[in-house]
Length: 266
Image (cartoon, rainbow, N blue to C red; front, side):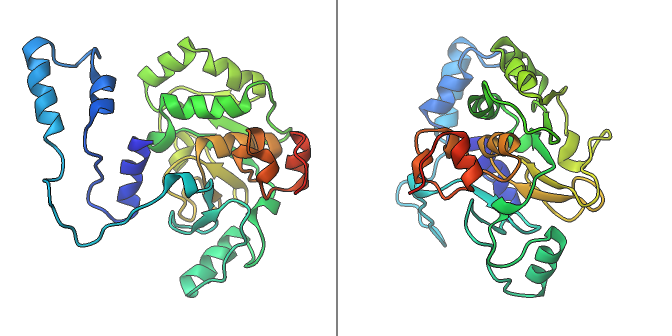
């Protein structure tokens, strides 16, 4: 989650994105292959923990977000900021660029994007291709199948991630479900190595950019989380992943998705 936030800070126009190192950071780094040892480790930890805002620091703007109140979100336009909670209606465009984005995506103001069939699901990229991301997707997909006719690619973000994922058996979860387990790389994030979304096709992707043609000429991209992407691969339409978890009865989801997990209509 931290790396995803830092990665997406750039997409929001920042020069850099950083989360102050803390004990969670230290615990993650300790004992890793290239981590310092002995006294050098102690010195490094002291240095890392100093990379925080000074007490009493002031800022031009402070934004506080309640993570527990944020519902799973996905984009409806052609920029990462053009998004809303899954199941909500597409808003009226505010300007010509918004009108152009909706025309390109084939969405209509007032409708929910959950009504559109999805052709391709891509899980990976530098944004959401790490081990916790793959675990989140596998949790949703385990014991289930990718909807027939839908193509799903899962691409680890690095060779180390691939090795760790395979050691945990995550690759088997994906392949048993009908997804393609690929070697690490940029892949469909930017239509590399032939991994492209065909013209007119709609993809749900865990990457960081959804500009026109980003995943192939004429491709249409919805950005979403790994868990959302996995749930979408099962249902064939953009799906809130909580429909497969404990909150399922509370969701605003297409009836087919609710019926698939035995959720009762509110």
